[in-house]
Length: 292
Image (cartoon, rainbow, N blue to C red):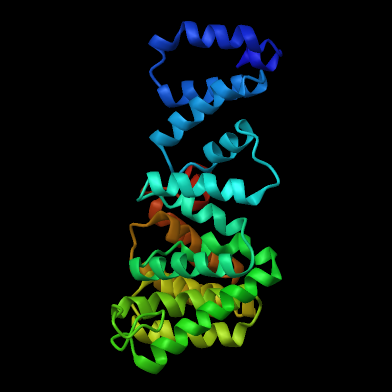
């Protein structure tokens, strides 16, 4: 590390390789070696390293980005898509090589891949599905594609019921009841993102009516109320969400944050106190909490 900062890359690489057998953390060793090789311009060697790293962890986006640099992929989107398709075929269960092309494509091809990605996520009940779509919201054309797909799914569900056909509108395949639940949540998050609060509220209420005990439903509903300016109701909903899983420190910290925003200082401190040492005031140990 010190040699790299001093610009002595050749010596740094030599020292690293000399001690390869005694370095226990092989992933860190490979990452450091790949980085140095790239800086030295030895791209073919660096490419091999990053392919090995992808073999170890096909979900690490940084490895794909560095591999793109190694093999000289730049402006031609088709070449970059081909690379991700290769890894998607090689690692059937990996999500990253299937997700990355969504950020590169436009038009009908994007719509086709988005359709596959969203429907698969809805059927599996992936809570982070919307977060994976957020980078697309910088493009109005991509937002339009997302909205059209989501409204089509809602139309199929509300017209035929989840047992009357798939989200694609096919009559031969039935959806599970949870597909409709995650669909309503996703549509609510979409309209919340584009600033259409009334429509977002409509769909989150549909999700709540479907399954009122799902933590994610309450958290999304709280977020929508926050964006609507109703901080008290948002805090109440987030508090209700954390009451369904009192051992989850993340939800606990979110509830405390929402309570603070609503001006409920005493309740917020009491909420933080659930994960502090017994007998200590929460305010004295906040800096030691994991959420900080």
